Amino acid sequence: MLSRLRRGLAYLILKTMDRVPATKAASREGHMNCVFCTLPEDRHLAANQHFYAVADHNPVTRGHSLVISRRHVETYFELSAEEAASLKDMVNELKAILDKRYQPSGYKLLMNCGAKAGQRVFHFHLHVIPF
Image (cartoon, rainbow, N blue to C red; front, side):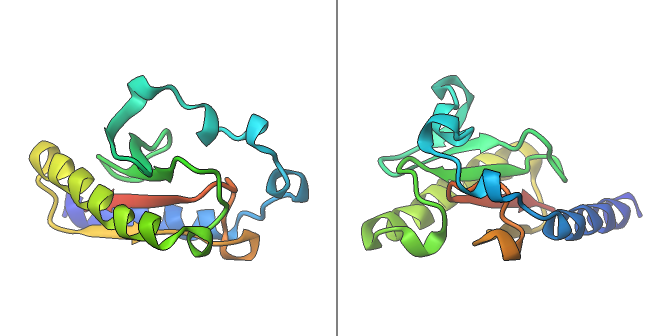
């Protein structure tokens, strides 16, 4: 029952996040103002050449994490072929860590590409949400 309630709450939070409009000023932030470009390495859960993973600062479930590109690009569609392949490796490495810590029954992978899709931080990141 608690697990079903937790999933329902996570669903509602994610749906609400998708409805929050991004401001024009936020979408035009440069690298210097980018929150992901300035995260300290001691927050990294895992890392490779192209990505690093951190715990989400406002998690919708236990273990909710972000995989963030090292190179400042706004969306998945701007990643190089090498980065896109490396993303899978990073997600699998993070999954192994989260499996060990939380033993989830499943995962939701979520990325919002563009303000109309609900993206609020304009630096590529993938939500890895254990359930």
